[in-house]
Length: 630
Image 1: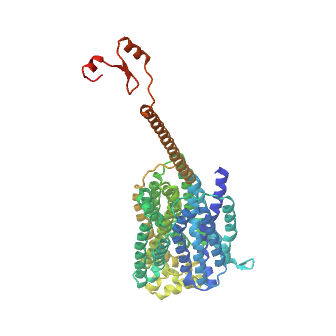
Image 2: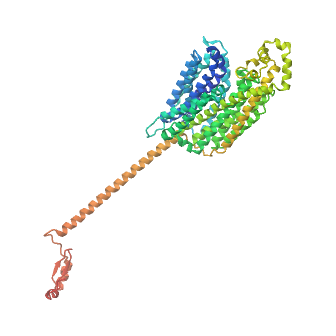
Image 3: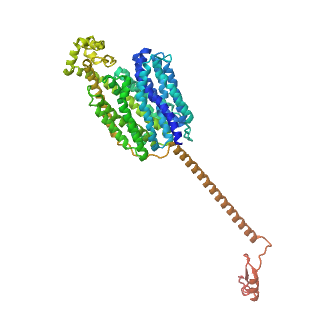
């Protein structure tokens, strides 16, 4: 493919990936408005969970099916399903409907997240791929920044073209999706990797990956509400573990046709990178989900402002991604980047453990930049390493598996981080309200008539007036709006308590990052291939054709030699037959050797012919004496 064709294909892939990346950030800031309009604030978690579950479980399915039937048709199907889900979500009349339609959206999103990277693996060699994948991370970064801004703008608008503003959070996907669909249909023409083997679809594998993951994802999202040791949670654990065991048995039995072939885990690079991706996803999503909440609650930022304040993380991610991509493209070496990336990730989390509620905002922004510098070196490098370790025919399943493990890590990280945050919150709030340095100013503010007269302090004064430690400790679990506009002296204990609980989360992030740093040292240093998967497959097919032609040519030569040998044997047999006929036929006397005849006559001896056609003289003396003639 020419550079222009590659750029056009990449533009279409980026448009599609922008849809899924934007959808993950734009909805979050709008959910409260959506829930208020449809009625059902308690159901908003299911709207998020439904999308997450279907997007996660369909990721490996898309990867395997694209290996069997081609990337292009599967990618077009994924975009179409996502647009259908977006349209239906924008028409929802209840939270239950929205949850179902978001699940449909997730089915399409699974393909939008996995297939672009697989297609990149098809059309570009690993060394070249590193340069272009920086564009994809740029899309991810831009969507992370503008998503909250667009979501806040649309949901905060009463109506747009006669339609409620929040509905445009989903409908805005339609024009972008149609553009992506046109670009893909017009410019994306990636050949399918042919195989002589009969295609078998791993239906049982697809079934049991759902059985295994759905309960675990549900308990990850709902465990803090149910209780991690409740009957519902234990039931999810049991079903999930059974599903995992049966899934592995099914995949072993399916062999090459498995949804997630077990042979991939016999490749050291793939196994190590999959485990590292799980840990990186755990740490990455934990930071990206808790930092905006910290910015809004402790720093007092609005949802739109928190999106802008995340710029250091996004810029760090983009800079390190582009720089590492250029270095990989020029040197063909990538092993150092997982090590450096996890080191930066651990350093960033360590920096954030020193956060305090009264610290300047630049402190957390520096920590975000360090984490971004680490993530940028990891995301594309792990994908390239996975793709480089497998053959062209396994490119889709390897890419989707890499994305799949990162998503699983992200889901677990988000659930565990938030669970730790809110389980620690009651303890840290109790400690904050026991600190004399905080209680003194707060008591003075409560007795200040001006503070009492300010309506912005009404909710927080009513809460503090209960003097109920349990109620105060659970105050931030569901709604923190009472802190908005409140007197700083009254809000200070709550902010300190939330800060201390968040620092506990960052300590966990540091532990996970250090573990990832250790694992990164075991990533093998395989040389990057310098041809694309398409070229590699074409070369393999050409080699197979050449080998077949060579075998045919050898067969023709052997047949020709055999035929010549048969002709020679026939000629020799005919010659022998002729000689035998000449020697034994009656009346066919051999010619007399004139020289021998004359010599015998001169010697006075008669001659007789022999059976060989030569002559010999008869010794008369021998014959007279009764001896046989010689």
